[in-house]
Length: 212
Image (cartoon, rainbow, N blue to C red; front, side):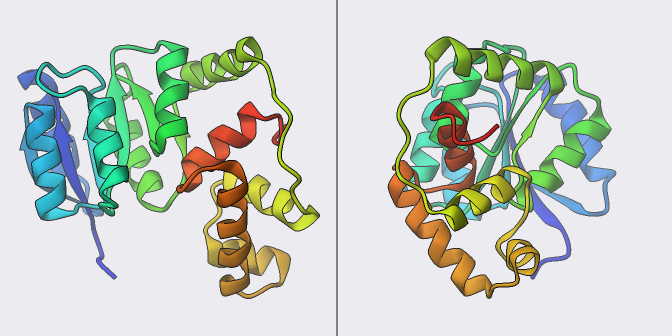
């Protein structure tokens, strides 16, 4: 297991790239492996370097950040995506989480907040700026809830703990079951929700009214 989280940055604004790169280099628990200015370069570097986290802008000229996310998920690249964007449109945020993003911060976040979010996303947590989180909840209300799948009591417990940011071993300790059993429940849960990733499971669970 690596001591430091390997990070890729993709943003078409040089000043943003430079500031973020400088902040990451100052954090001993983070390792900057690539800084690029386009979505296409981000996908190429994610495929080649396989960093733990890619920090992407949503809107990039050549390849939209959401398309980069879809490609990363579709190609099973083991990189979690944290969006850092000036756009806080709740519909866009909601859709990125449903597609598998690990977090979404606005560009007004401090360097410390961004670096903390990178570390949290690498641990499997889902991170949102407070103002963005409120917008996502509103988006859920606007879209309305739909009838949810029949989850077992254990699966309902587990999706709640996933939403709290707990890893499979942590969930196992909380529920006094083996991590392998947790992973089996998670696989069943993902299948019922039609997702492949924990952040997407949380977003889908929220949309279906399975989380309160």
